[in-house]
Length: 348
Image 1 (cartoon, helix red, strand yellow):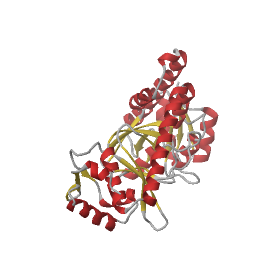
Image 2: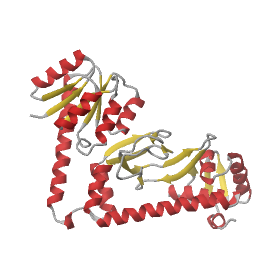
Image 3: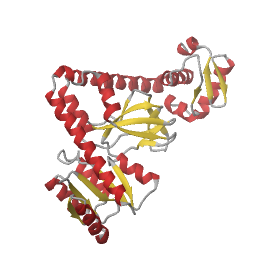
Image 4: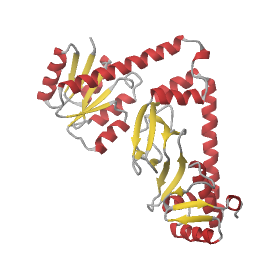
């Protein structure tokens, strides 16, 4: 008999839902608030948790965060239950690590389907992990390519429209992402409100690395520059993979080291290069990320170009006009086409 923990402060809804689930042969534990729910989850290790969002003392987001920080409860499927149906509320819950979301009022079939599908998925993933421990080393994940395939096959898929945030600075980091499609920028806002783009990420890049040991807050925000698709894997799952494969750990360390070196070069360019060189190098950087050189056009907002280059937008626009007159680029609206790659690469 599968065990369900229901955390709901509405007495009538809690009792009616519990009765329904018991009639369907589930063992049901109930909690009237988040504090009780957290304690029951840690004591009883249910197969799935259904939790209301809006509750006194500690809300559903707080419950999820507390259970995500505990290795004993982090893998338990978590379903949010709330009257809130706005897109931003759903997105917030999923970004925090929820597995599903049901809006009140819900149909019996919706509730049962959500519970059964999440328990089934958790069972399958657990079986895969047990099988991985039993198979020879040579059949396990061996390199970054295998790791990316694992993300693609087993990760949760998310779609973000242009301008939407994958995550925001100060938000808790529970997952590492692999980009399947699109371009994402990471950025910080300084005290004066100016945006500084810290990096650009394209398809096949990892995103969201903070501490692998703790679910610490993000140090920057990540926003889609175009419609993107990413897949996310819990950091606890990634830790298990890295513990089993020294080779993947070393390849990932090298990847992160290269990223740090690239950021240092960008900072040096922003600090010491001329405006012309900063602008040229930024155009080339976007061209590389977008897989464009002398063919195709780069469609990017001027303020994003200026932010990466570390110069004022007005200065960037004047420099682009100069490049156009020199025949280095062609400009049509927001589109930039590189005409003389070599000269751009060697500008001082």
